[in-house]
Amino acid sequence: MEELSELLQLRRAKLDAWRSEGTDPFGSSFPGTTSVASVIADFAEEKTVRVAGRIVAFRDMGKSIFGHFLDQTGRLQFYANKQSLGGNAADPTQPADPSKLESFRRLDLGDIVGLEGTLFITKTGEKTVKVTKFALLSKSLRPLPSAWHGLSDDETRYRQRYLDLIVNEEVRRTFVLRSRIVSEIRRYLEGRGFLEVETPMMQAIAGGAAAQPFVTHHKALNLQLFLRIATELYLKRLLVGGFEKVFELNRNFRNEGLSRKHNPEFTAIEVYQAYADYEVMASFVEGLIIHLAQNVIGTLQIPTGPVPEDGSPRKTLDLTGPWPRKRYRDAVKEAAGADWFDLAPEGRKARAAELGVEIIPGLLDHEVTNHVFEKLVEAKTVNPVFITHLPKELVPLAKQNSEDPSVVDVFELLINGQEISPGYSELNDPLVQRQRLEEQVGEEVHNLDEDFLLALEHGMPPAGGIGIGIDRLVMLLTGAESIRDVILFPLLRPR
Image (cartoon, rainbow, N blue to C red):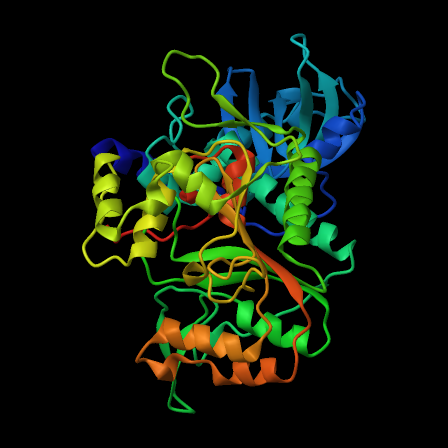
């Protein structure tokens, strides 16, 4: 702690030194800059450039200084000596001004600088800018994490994401890829005629999913409101209104626990297409994810799982299509026994215990089966598979199957141990929908969304719909192990 204090004092002293010579250490703009990526792409020796970024390496070799700076697009080496900074270009025989190099020497790791100079290649073959002019744009009053040890503590990485982005190149890459994935999703949908819309984030009734909402209060109307848990019911109102292909990239909020796969605030997309069904939407989501893997990540072979301690390669999941489809009932029987559905409810609980699946008291029979499904099927799935025809009790907003009334026409896309996307043939019968929702809310009839049911009574076209958790999708495509690694500022417990 004492050493850190000395470092802070030294930086404050340098701050005063800059000010004493008339330099604003939190200076003005530096227009006309070129990104590192552009400099490297269009590199030509002796070319003059203006660049700016944060110093992340600084080696004072006495008569000359080498270092690296970082901008959003990459790193570039810089070089400076007394002649380059203080020389007289009009008359090279004149002595150089040594004060410029001394000022440059006062820079620290973490300082943000603007540099002007000419490009050259060092003897080791590294592209470099020889600095002829520089400007301190923002003085860093605290040191960066060690260049050798980086920033490896996860708690610090998440709380101080800005440091994580500065020192960890792989982290920067992940979030650049996340941005590109989201942009490509929009392009893919818009190119197929879908309209992006916005629906309320504060709702009088939290519907469209079974989840615990966050509660807030509107003072002017003296009205209790909920942060939305899903966009489904409002997007279906738009199907009623004649918007036949719509999507919303949205933030949802669920007042539930934190885990490797869950953050209370998360990003999702819901997509609805009139006159389609769950099979059309399964093909659609398969095409979308394959497109993202090929065009953003550049491969259908995605590294996954922890890095082995012996240095061997990570496991790989294969996104090559077509992806198989399997009925829910068949998947459960393969995992829990061919006679699973022939057992009595108590027999199923006993079988679950034999299989190592803990069943908490009070679960309904269909919930016991689904718990077994989640532990023995979903959690163990690696390569993509569509699980279809789930029990109607699990999906109250989906259309009942015409041949088997105990199931609904839906899919769950499982990849790498988690659900990536559910998809439905949407229920558009207002009478059946009312019955399903009444069963879901039980005695809490005040949670029935009467406005949504009223909309359905005006006629909603048959439609297919999907939802995709963007955070989980980014985890999948980048190989990230935790949702916190793909959310810039995840929710954390207080210190």
